Length: 216
Ligand SMILES: CC(C)(COP(=O)(O)OP(=O)(O)OC[C@H]1O[C@@H](n2cnc3c(N)ncnc32)[C@H](O)[C@@H]1OP(=O)(O)O)[C@@H](O)C(=O)NCCC(=O)NCCS
Image 1 (tube, rainbow, N blue to C red):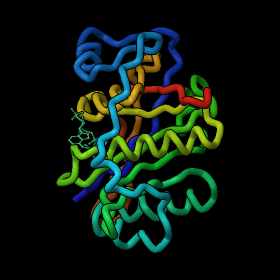
Image 2: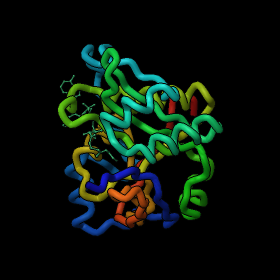
Image 3: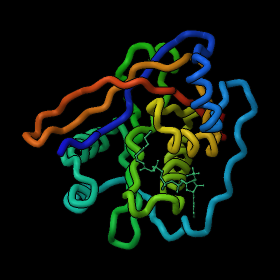
């Protein structure tokens, strides 16, 4: 079966938020307001979260991560990028078991529009928690860990792309203080690995969300 690899591409530099009323309904349901509106209050971190350790991936993790999450191609690729200082693949652990992933993309965005509108912005990509362990704060903890990493490294802003139908993830991002970037929906891409190992790039419509970090 094919598996989605990533959501990382995005871009648009229209100065005004150009969502249609239907699009705004999705944003409203997700609690996302356009940039400039008051940010959603940050949710208190649950004590459950402390059960999970978050750290960058290590070469020895790849086998078990691949077993739990699949996407070997993605894991190998991001490990190599991390090794070359191009990003960080954060992993969340419950004891010896990996439970979640998030890749911090520190290279220029793949789309020229994003690099134009958000030059040098770091991108949070491929947030994924094992289905049976969702709603326990793991996704939030991965996000906050990546944000703290960026703050510690002097970043002032972070961005991400979320599929237009992924209202659940969008609600999570809104709770964490992410706001629509004001540039409207854009085409981003997922990468699917076919059973024969070939990788197929597929376009999909995404919202772009941004957040100013505490070091700003
Ligand atoms: C999106 C995703 C990463 C969220 O991960 P998660 O670990 O479930 O996220 P959290 O637990 O931090 O928050 C999710 C919900 O759990 C609630 N929650 C957080 N901590 C909790 C706790 N300790 N106990 C109970 N509920 C909790 C949150 O309020 C939130 O509520 P919501 O569903 O109303 O938004 C996960 O659903 C997933 O992997 N989805 C598939 C991949 C995907 O869509 N990725 C995003 C691409 S942009």
